[in-house]
Amino acid sequence: MYVSARSDYALRAMLAVAAGGDGDGDGGSGGGGLVKAASLAEVQDIPLSFLQGILLDLRRAGLLHSHRGADGGYALTRPAGEITVGDVLRAVGGTLTTVRGLPAERAGYHGVAAGLTDVWLAVHGAIATVVDSTTLANLLTRPSTDHAPTTS
Image 1 (cartoon, rainbow, N blue to C red):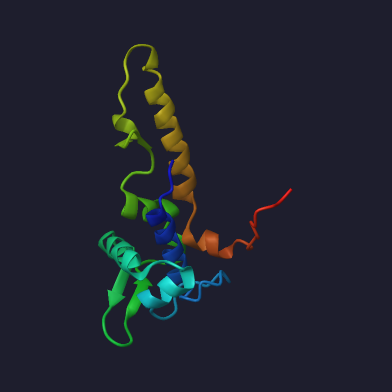
Image 2 (cartoon, rainbow, N blue to C red; image 1 turned 180 degrees about the vertical axis):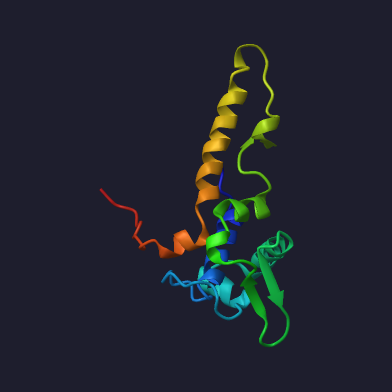
């Protein structure tokens, strides 16, 4: 599985919306006010023009709704506990696992390599199990850990 910048940004934006836009990871319920795209871009350090395309995909997938106007912004369409990482990844990337640019189920082999299809499908299934059982709410309630690189 390759996690593109687009997928990473989409998940970060959805988490910030679910947290009410503050992006501080304090486990917010996402039931608060609307979050502006410019605020999401700033808090999550995402280029605004790139983020706007991502937000459009998330809206089209039914994960976000937007309100226009001075008091407008974005909000989740469902509670954070009902939106999975898999929902977000599929909304912006299409498929979870690719083999040579094709969905895992379309990777075809013959001869001695025929068994690879089963391996790629098993990998896809394992990834789907993890991302489809992890919700935005799960991520918001996890204690934050510092993953700073270590030096030797």
